[in-house]
Image (tube, rainbow, N blue to C red):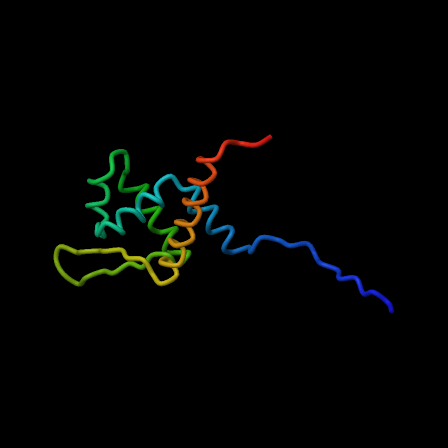
Length: 116
């Protein structure tokens, strides 16, 4: 009986999702923006007022990146003065579950002593 050996190819990280996680987690403000949205703060002006050190320019860049990845959606209301609100997309909801899992993993790692 001839034994067949299985050959596996090198496993690489999923390109788009890995880049998305790296970009968003590397952004100083994205996780704060997600927290604001979770607490019902959806308007950019209110976000800037609620977070010390967050400028309008940096917030707009952060929101734009998250919209490009499909995590956030922007709603522009046709009224004067203009009103803009941001919300999580269904993909954004899934992404937040992944971030929550990463946070739990970090807490587990922090609670266990490091092993050599």
